[in-house]
Image (cartoon, each protein chain N blue to C red):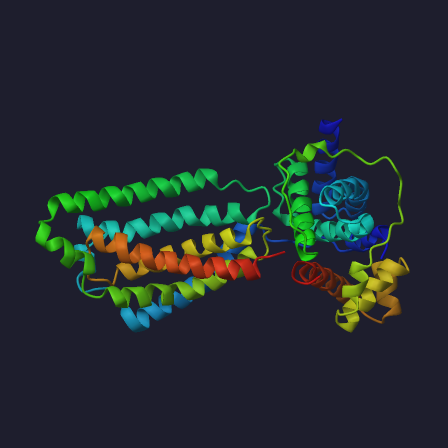
Length: 183
Length: 212
């Protein structure tokens, strides 16, 4: 099962890196519940309330997104994913002022959480979204909240598609950078 | 924001022609190295008769040794900048290079009369070397750090130190073509000390600017 998962994730991420947005969306959707249970186990171990879990899951997804070119396509993807996850969890706990005992257990112990919770909400990104420059904020919000496509966003904001893509890309990079420096 | 919404946003942002990390490091270093070379050409220049002297074992060693450090530091910095990078093989190479330096020092102590040890160790201008190498290293260090920002180092301080080693070793190799002090005693003391200074600056900068 673990081998299957590795194969599926690496082929999805390879496709995503080659520009396949659907493959990318699929792997992120598969990762979300796995990351959620991973984060919850960490929080439980550090005696932090579960309430922050979704924020941290979203921080990890953002980090995976902005750092996905650091995965070497011929290398296993799961160790890479969980190294990023672990780094972000430790970072998040540190920022929340927790003393951290780094466990040495194997990342592979994290199994998929079977409970379906598709609509969990994190507040953290919304908070940082407000501090983005206007155009970037509008673009991210249009796509996230109203579920618009690039083309629809371009039309409604009277921008070119290229400009929407650039604003989106910069906005996400800025959100990820803020995640690293501020709480 | 819902996690599903975030995923939709992320999927809408395609990976557009991301430069691989190794290439980014090259692009980052090149302008830094160019600035160093200009500084070198304007303020220092090669020592007189460098080409005739370059095959002298001591002179050859003090130029080639920093370049070997540089060649080791480049892949090391890349390993440190990748989440799953493994720096250990390259750290072994680094250790081996330190042993080579120790051997060079030992050989120098054997061939050199006792009364010259102190003179060669202090050299003509140790202080100048301590100022010039970090100055030549500054621009390549900035370039390397900018490039590594695109990486994802699990230990930003260490990755910064790796960038410092890269920049410091390059600067030391360049300065070696100007420096009149050739003894391995001088190289092992002052060159190594200045490279360590550049590494410390890199480590501090890394802990600030390479976080993600």
